[in-house]
Length: 360
Ligand code: NAD
Image (cartoon, rainbow, N blue to C red; front, top):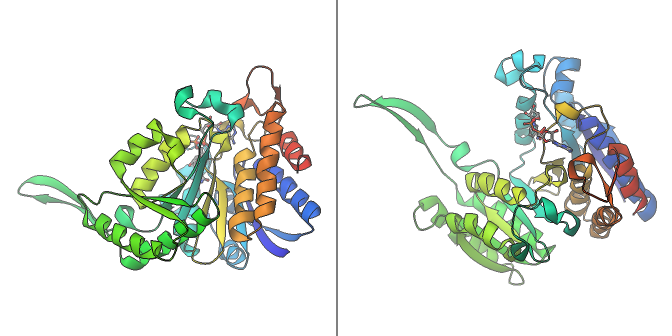
């Protein structure tokens, strides 16, 4: 397959982790006979330094004409970096928010997978962990409370604030379709999370999800109230495959789900639009404290590249090969410093990338 991938190294550890992930993609090309064309683009602090703004039209155009984007991370030390002396709309994060908007990335996917080799990092009891868990939180990213009308005003002498949670049926339908499509690539179960016992927006959410489910009779659907879901994530995380939910619930639940895996350097993510296009990035930030030291764990970025193969390019066998290579390298006792444990060998960012590439 011939395909165009834009690489956005970004700031801090970004260039190191993207370089390690590219080694893995190069190996996939070699092994499976593909031709991936890469183009590098600037975003965040790197773009401010080079062009004076955190996101240029050039980067937007490059991303729009690509099949997918693989990003490192953006931002600097918020206390010391000169980027944070700038007004908020000119800071690195403004570039990230704008590119998500420009690309209409309404679906955010965050897998929470517990590697058996890293069970010690999981804060849950061994009997709850069992053989591990493997779930994916699919969060609506461009609607709901964070984008609704809001104001702060004074009423009857009291300061009052209002936020609005609104969804229309199309916004719900398109994310539900993504959720069911992705469940088909996994264990074929969708847990739709809402607060339908209280909220009108949730009752509409539930109705539309059920309509969509009618087209996916091979996928099991269950509904769960968000408060129960927060509890179930720590009581029995094994029960979940795809958790489908609105923006704010997803924001909170995805952090909870990722915490139970224990290791920030292992958490991948994807943001998708209505087409196959997606922007793939680790869930962690740019870790300025360890930037440039070959200490960063590149696995979250490598697993994000695996998601790119699966969801944007439909290369499921290749994605599996990358994930299995990660598993194999961990089984063989290789670790970066953040996931280091007794009896294992500590390697740097680039070496970890090479080991995973060789294991494919
Ligand atoms: P962070 O995730 O960068 O770092 C938190 C801690 O985790 C640090 O101790 C760091 O060393 C460690 N860490 C993170 N990733 C690691 C990895 N791959 N391997 C080993 N250790 C890792 O969060 P922060 O310190 O709050 O933020 C730093 C910068 O990153 C800020 O400018 C913030 O705005 C930005 N940020 C960017 C994104 C993004 O690009 N999507 C996301 C979150 C934060």
